[in-house]
Image (cartoon, rainbow, N blue to C red):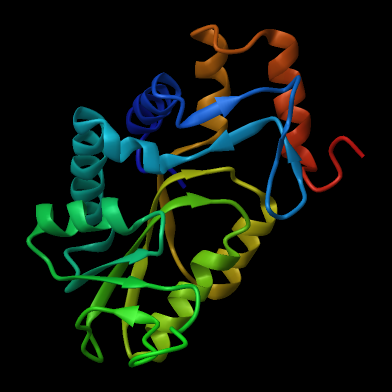
Length: 213
């Protein structure tokens, strides 16, 4: 779910402006999963634009308190959400931790970096939701460490059915600043894409794993 329609449209427009979201139906991108995609999203670019990162920080801080209540800790999912997670934690005056995809192979072999006590309420920050698998692995690590997960907040979601199912099965509430459904009409209205390209992007969204096969 998006936090609000206004936030979703504004966030999508900002991401398009700085090419954090690139739309290229004619020359698809290749994802690490092997999927071919007419869209590529790199929200880490927002950190290089002070006005945009501050907007994202402020929207997260405002909506997190509204939806989840003020948590004890903000957790960022490594590596994409570390930067924005720190900004949100700073804005809310809260401790910050981040979660690796897996424990380190050396040293203390931590998967969670930072100070986290059992029983603390945690909101998890993500930059991007595709299938949700990697995000929920971070949640699992936090739960194993004794955290009480209040929910997850992300910058953008593709809104795949598999992600919706994964979060529902994990019983984790997910809210995003923007999503695919908010992006496409805005991209068309602002002439980032043509009508035929919008149809291509809509078709990809229906079955991304088999698109172009």
